Length: 239
Ligand SMILES: C[S@@+](CC[C@H](N)C(=O)[O-])C[C@H]1O[C@@H](n2cnc3c(N)ncnc32)[C@H](O)[C@@H]1O
Image (cartoon, rainbow, N blue to C red):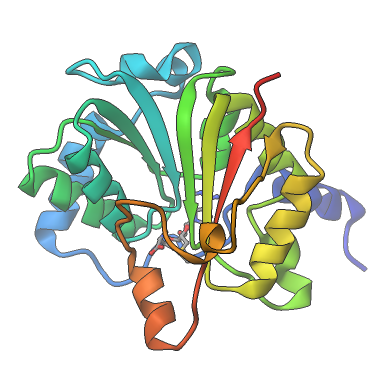
């Protein structure tokens, strides 16, 4: 029989972390390993500074801060940062190969307005002060499709509480998925959450990508496999 104290601490860990994926994939190439050792400490944020005011994490000065959770290969994060040099982007990713890819692009393109949280996004959301973020992207989160895996999905009431806390009034929470069931899962949770509104004008609002959209690796995979996407834009309530 298993020790009930272990079960209790497993349940605690489940609640505390939203990351259930792989931390490591292919072995890093030697330059990627160098970047992880030398560049990551400079680009990684301090949760202490973030908890006071995330805008202070950026030098040169930026006008606002946006967050991308689970940036994967960093296609969207890098493209956004290049297109909007006055915005500071915090990318969260716990998969080491994804972090190394982002660092390589930051170096190659000499990007100054990206900082990384190379770990569970919930830690960052918990640390950030209220009303400090102007937009939050959750693009193609891990689907965890099997019924017994669904409790691992990052979208939960607790997650929405944290997103509602950090977003400024009127700010957008953008969510994309190619899994119908995940779109419905998220919609049902957001619609009953006090902090958000969803008021699409027509079906194009959720079947077409956002203006100026930069596609991601998972989106390309979905298209190759014949799946379309839902693009949901939720607004942080003003009150
Ligand atoms: C299905 S992939 C999508 C990647 C990318 N957004 C794209 O569209 O190509 C989901 C990513 O989220 C990351 N992830 C999952 N849970 C996370 C968490 N709690 N904190 C940070 N990253 C997380 C995974 O490591 C994975 O790279």
